[in-house]
Image (cartoon, rainbow, N blue to C red; front, side, top):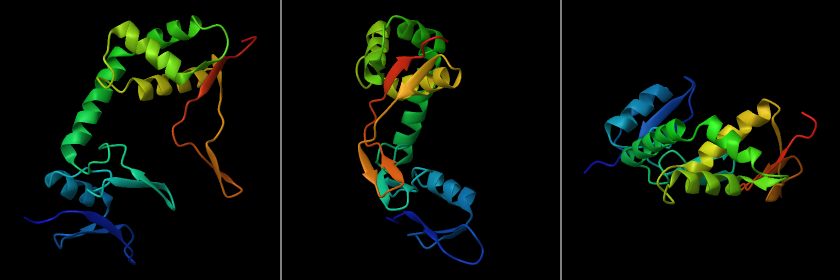
Length: 171
């Protein structure tokens, strides 16, 4: 069985990638296509890890750290279903019911309970987070947070963000 794990290569031609099967790939698009054709995640290229910032590795969020295409597609379909089911109207109504600060997890748990979703059925937390960010961008709420850790003097690290939310007063 041929192994396929794609890794970036440095060279004078810009973005280049090489697969463990011996194939050289010019450009990210070509690497993504090769990954998809071989059942690998097209984000982490089968490595099951991603590096959001230099020196910080974590499990790939697109394929749930599996490196496989099936899990990536399953996650994408679940997220698309969550976008259809968990609407701005739903989240806005739940936020209106809170008097004062609240945590993302409180809103997500209320959404999950209100829709009768078992834990793990849909990515409720990420969808609620995205909608709360839209509410913040529209000036409807103000979000407060504290980092889990300082990395150096100019970077903060949020390992498992539990964002505290508060409605903006006077808006």
